[in-house]
Amino acid sequence: MSDTVSRLGQVLVVCAPSGTGKSTLISKLREEFPNFGFSVSYTTRAPRGDEQNGREYNFVSRETFVAMRSQGEFCEWAEVHGNLYGTATAPVNKMLDEGKDVLFDIDVQGAKQLKKTFYKGNFIFLLPPSREELTRRLVGRGTDSEESIAKRLANAQGEIAQADFFDYWIVNEDLEQAYQEFRAVFMAGALKPELRTDVEATILKEWED
Ligand code: ADP
Ligand code: 5GP
Image 1 (spheres, rainbow, N blue to C red):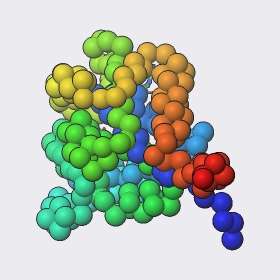
Image 2: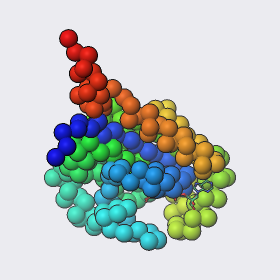
Image 3: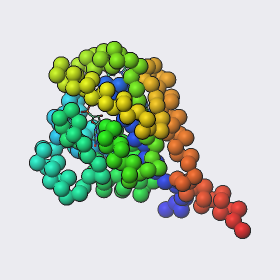
Image 4: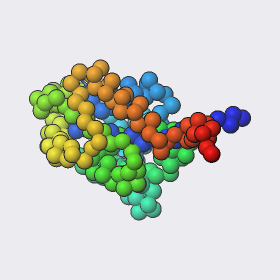
């Protein structure tokens, strides 16, 4: 077994009004960095498109969700667009303990709750370039009903009003540019001293009195 010390995992939280391109950017990051730990949320909503249970979400009934919530299994949860969503604490802590970076795709209410537990995490807000373009993307995605799109657009207003909470703002106009910015935040986050157990165990050790 190798005795190499690795750095600690970072917490990367990404929020965006629905339709901005958050899933698209997260997929690109996970493709480039396959070792990323992804916090697979629990939700009471039905699977969309080719979503698979355990991959994009753990799809559960409202009864199961409520039971998990009352047993204190979630570090955050929220009702979004009429469905319940939550992050189970145990799998996240396991990934972080293993030194994996963990990515959270959650809504703004959830991010605010998560900040209490992971206050040193990097909290990123993605913005659509305009209201018109957000509408176009939601319609173009072809996965939501007219009613659901209207709900998502109404919600966007409230989310954008809370943009000040975040550490970074990335406008997803040109996908490649937005991806490079997203990647840069991740790369810089991994260099923070509090995560650098690798440097402490090697270089800093060599310089100890
Ligand atoms: P979210 O996860 O934020 O709800 P998606 O990743 O599903 O959003 O993206 C919504 C739609 O917008 C998808 O059809 C996606 O292909 C498209 N999209 C994402 N980023 C861009 C971009 N920079 N320019 C144009 N279309 C985009
Ligand atoms: P969608 O139904 O489009 O996949 O997600 C709707 C919203 O719920 C998105 O903003 C997404 O980030 C958010 N969401 C997904 N999982 C969680 C979660 O575990 N907790 C919270 N608070 N929001 C979540």
